[in-house]
Length: 231
Length: 231
Image (cartoon, rainbow over all chains, first blue to last red; front, side):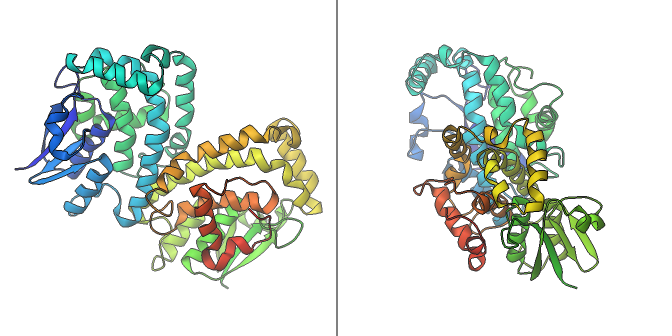
């Protein structure tokens, strides 16, 4: 049966841009587990109805179905415990959870604010109306109004990364000497942006830029080979 | 010889308020290592001249001298590896470093801005002039002007804790099921405030408040018994 990963895709099957799916793609590569990445669109709720919910990532492993990126990461570490750890074992898992909350609560919303208006042009035709309507309802204005004033927001985004920038003065990865789940969670924000937006989020002299280069190169350039914009 | 910890003290020997010293005090309790806490004042540079620098915490362990709170934590984990880990081993250490950078770069500066003006009244007489002059030079204004507008800054401080608040929905401590270094690093910010300022940093219905209660109670109430204000 093997492992399958349902991933959000855009107009092209190859344009995968969901940050929550990206962290699982990188996590599977980290574990060295082969998998099929199955393109899925927002409006194809019926295709994942078997999960009892309507969001990706969805991971199927034989008969097992796991949803929610954190739950999938924990599942992979438990089930494939003989392979390189994602979360750093029991002592690391709590810290990995906090760092994931930092990524999701601080970094992703800032990226969202910068790139949301770029997304519709890369969506599959069948998703465009759903996406615009649901997201404009969520943010309470047009996507274009929401993403105005990019200049100051980009500077603000740079400041939010300050603790990570500081950390990179001591170690090459968020998880230490080698990348692990926290790096994939953070890199997923950049893969998201890269997949849909021409905006350059980082200056080339930023240590975070260098880290992102390493992440784009990881696993035979998994992140860099993906369909998207140059960063 | 045993372990000694030079800690910043205020007017009273018992008023210890440095966040960097507090995290080591809690770390030593975590490791179950007995130690002498030696009160030290800002202007007593000569008393720690043997370290080749002028800041506390300073830890002496027999003939060994270690400075810098992160270096001390790493030293304790390496030297007393058979005792409960602070940093979570090699896989946890990188994540612990990032969380420390988040505490130091995000949380401490926000607390600094709220309580700096409260510090002089709790300093030893010999430290007052040094502290005011050096800090006012650093912030470019009077301490009182620097700490004006506490209301909006307090609200901002609450927002900075959002990722931790989110994390507490899943686990009781920053490090997971039990406290470890990341918790001591964060709690040290609250011990600092508690030692010198009557300001209430957290609302009682905040999950972070409950976490802080647990931290104040830890190790037979080490944090709560210390001289300071009720929180």
